[in-house]
Structure formats: C-alpha cells, structure tokens
Amino acid sequence: EADIYQTPRYLVIGTGKKITLECSQTMGHDKMYWYQQDPGMELHLIHYSYGVNSTEKGDLSSESTVSRIRTEHFPLTLESARPSHTSQYLCASSVGGQTYGYTFGSGTRLTVV
Amino acid sequence: QKEVEQNSGPLSVPEGAIASLNCTYSDRGSQSFFWYRQYSGKSPELIMSIYSNGDKEDGRFTAQLNKASQYVSLLIRDSQPSDSATYLCAGRYGGATNKLIFGTGTLLAVQP
Image 1: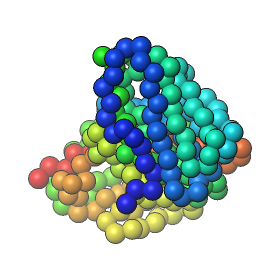
Image 2: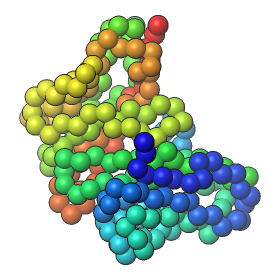
Image 3: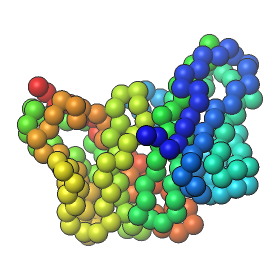
C-alpha cells in the first residue's frame, strides 16, 4: 500500500489555467522531490525539499513552483499551463542517510490542450 | 559525461534465462546504489539496494557492486515476461545534497 499519494492521477486542462499537483506522504520523511518524465524518457529532477520551509530548484529548469509548509505535504503549482508542460510528474520522498532510496508516488499525468 | 550511465537497450532475453543489466558511475563519492523497476506508464519501484562491494541476493534478483571498477549490475534469474520493464540504476552521494542520481534506464524485454 502506497504511503505517498499524488492527486489527481490524470489531468487534462486548457492553456493558461493555474493548476496544483498534490503530493502527500505519511512516512514522516524530511526529504521530498518532484520529477518530470516524458514517455520513454529519463527522469528529470525539477524541485526538492530537505524539510519545512526548504525548497530548491532541481537540475531541469521548470516554470513550476513548490512549497513545503508541512512535512507531509509538497504541492507543485503551475501558474499558467502550456502544452509544453504536458508530461508525467512524479513525487518522491526519503529519509536522510545514504542507505535509503526514494519512495515514489503513483504520478500525475498532465495534458495541457 | 553522465554521472550514472546505462545502456538504453532494449535487452531481449528468452523466458527462463538470466538477464544482466549493467550500470557504471563516474563519481567515486557515490556511497550506495539502487535498482528501480518501472513499468510503462507507472512510477519507479525500488527492487534492490547495495552499499558494499560484492553481491546481494533477494529472491531472483542479485545486485553486484564493484567500487574499484565503478560498476553496478543487476542479475535477474529465471526471467519472466512480467519482468519486462525499464530498469533504472541510481547512485546516492554523501554530503549536503544526498540526492539520488538516476541513469537513463535499460529496457528489458523477456520473450515468452
């Protein structure tokens, strides 16, 4: 059973709309991450957080923004969606320490028309 | 040069054979390594982790790490069609970042 939840699972939205992709985890993990992945392509880190009120941009430039007001919640917002934002967005979390991997949510597949 | 490199494949093996997936990394600071399985349209799922030189076995899966050669591999014994997926190798670095660096993944196709 998943301990990290993403909603919605699928979203089709018009150009120019503001959207927020939700990610919550119940494991008490300090570290959370957002990845973007196009079909058949590699994962790209777009945002990460090491704790409450800590957010950093990832390796891939993104027009999205994130916030981390509570440990368990790490939403991603697009102020004005464009067709180029069409992709799968994956949220992940982990504890600190080098022996731990990430746990991924089920993802949100976003289509901007 | 990417920090974690994998052959994109596809790697095609017959059912029941051993599938061997390989990964090399460039940074000797990498402390631990992880193998994820990702089915098409799904999110990555952690299947193995390894931190020490040598082999680590879990069921049909064996992870191998050679830090001197900067090489990580995943062996899948008795491959099944349900093993067909993309396998992602990831290395975790120490220090403040502590992030996973993912390879691009190898597509495995197990032929019935």
